[in-house]
Length: 237
Image (tube, rainbow, N blue to C red):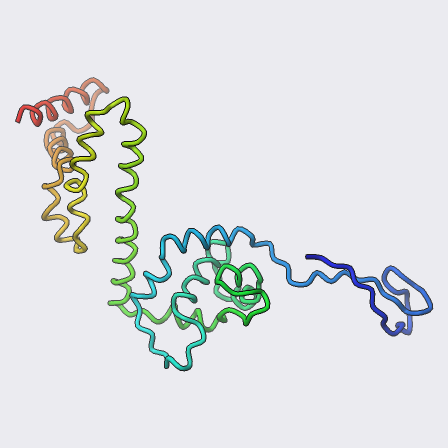
């Protein structure tokens, strides 16, 4: 909050006082205190907390620091860096000013009067910490985070169209686990091997096989005929 304060100070030897020129030497000043324009960070903090992304990424790293000398956990450093980037502060050097920002502190579960967040040098050490294996683990964690959202989209689709297309939605609900089978495997090689067990992918592959000699479709009707032939063949079998 912005507050007005009136305090007594010695009169300067020359010139006028700001806002006053009385004999007692009183000066009216504006004391802004700890202000911040980053209120949106609290909403981002709730999103990150729901996803658990910082903790997921921190679990992929090995902390080489002595536990008794750790002031900032890896998850806290990662969370601070993510919030910085989300707020438009891509340069790690901005941490020197933002580590004292009250909204950044609140977003990391600290009071504005608590100790400062991690410094730019700490963030730099974190960014240079992962080796090749750690980078692969981090990439895998992001893929798992992405795959975890796959069930949400079909469910929203089913809720939206269940009344109009009850039969199609029923098939989607019954076969959803089978449709997502390939995403249970972390290895790209394993996913390629089970790809044809995915009902939708198998039909897409058949459409590609039949249309490859044709090149481009001449019009929408020709595309519809090919799709109808593929799906009609599948329905008969």
